[in-house]
Every structure is written in structure tokens, then in C-alpha cells.
Length: 121
Image 1 (cartoon, rainbow, N blue to C red):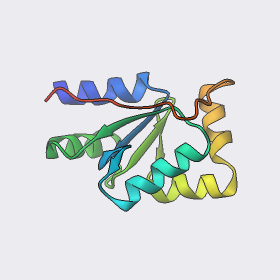
Image 2 (tube, rainbow, N blue to C red):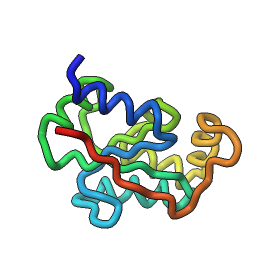
Image 3 (cartoon, one colour):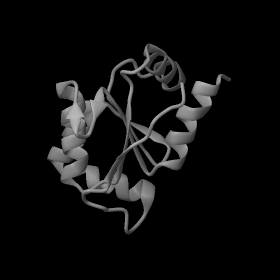
């Protein structure tokens, strides 16, 4: 397993909510990344965002590890939830809070708790 794979898996397994996106929370570089971020913000999820744009290997490695070809990718409690469409649909139906709560337990909400996590390339 490559160092990059290990770093990605470490983020997925240690961060309560990991969002692999194009851009950052302050400057999303695509509409789908923004939609996923907005859905997570709406429920008060603590988001650790990883910008996949600095190096194409990030996207390739992420897709290979989790068999999900598109960006963004949202992980909760170490499990892939899906991309922008799935996360937005869960938020609109009111189920996103339940999904996150099932994975993280009580006390997971932390509105405004966003940070960028960088990979060492």
C-alpha cells in the first residue's frame, strides 16, 4: 500500500466526517463539492475537508480505494456515504442527521467546525 493510500485511509478512519472535494470550504471549485458541503453544514456536521486538486494521484488513489469514481466523496465514521447527490438527498429528506448520528453517536453536531486536512505529497 502506498503512502498516499495510507494517508487517505487515515483521514477516512480518524475524522468523524471527511469530505474529499474539489477546493476547500472557503472556495469550493465545483458545484457538486459545494452542494455536499452545504448539506453537511445544514445539519451541523464537523467537516474535515481534503482538496483533491493539488495532485491527480489523490483522486486516482481515492477512487481505487473506495470504488467510487466521482468527487466529492463523503465519509462518516469511516464509511463511504456517497457523493453530492446522495448527501443532498439525505439532507433534503431529513435523513442525513440520522445517518451521521448512527455512525458517530450522540453529541456529533458541531456547527461551523470545518477544517482543511492536507495530504503530504
